Image (cartoon, rainbow, N blue to C red):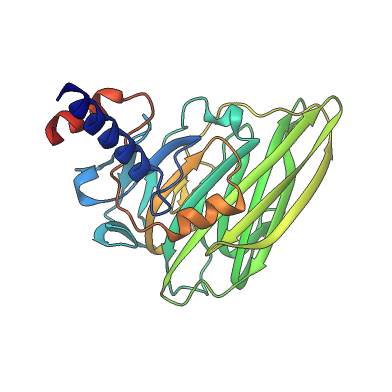
Length: 286
């Protein structure tokens, strides 16, 4: 009888871990922060980081609406955005990192920001839509996705690389965006590569080389979702819906990007190290 109970316990444990790593579930290796924007994870003006410790502050009055997975936030394009904090020491690891979100918009004429952080020091990083800043001037380019990154050096903040792609993500349907960085520093310079994935497909990969003794450091300004805030004034507000926002401290592979794209599971995963939660579920089942 005792051996049978042990076998059943082992089977349940294996089944639970298998469920959490099934193709329908998101990748959790390297996951730093995860905002579902489901109603249950929003308390007044706080958007809970269900994986990490970086709860976001909701600015304006974005609405909770049906999303790509569960629920999402709908931004009005006027004054709505989410302050996702400076993400602790994540900036130090940003040279090899991934950002991910689902978006839904039909605005392909007005410049708007999906994600951005820009302070007095680098990195200056983000994704903007329908426009690009050149020497302080805004140029409208309808239907364009523009991504960029700057890395600090002793002389200040200067660009390391950028890229753009024109794509039909402005059709009022849900689209999956992943932006990966893979940079290596060495004395006197460095090199790296940025990739944008749209709906699991690579778009406009960019290779970059640069000079100078540069380094990544903690963000000096909060990461803003749905607006560009610099210097101190929010602008380029996003019009549409944003859902399932995640940061990873490593490069997602093409296969992992596809896995997340295909996932339709709502948040039900257990962060690593929280075995008490797993055992609690196990006891309930027994």
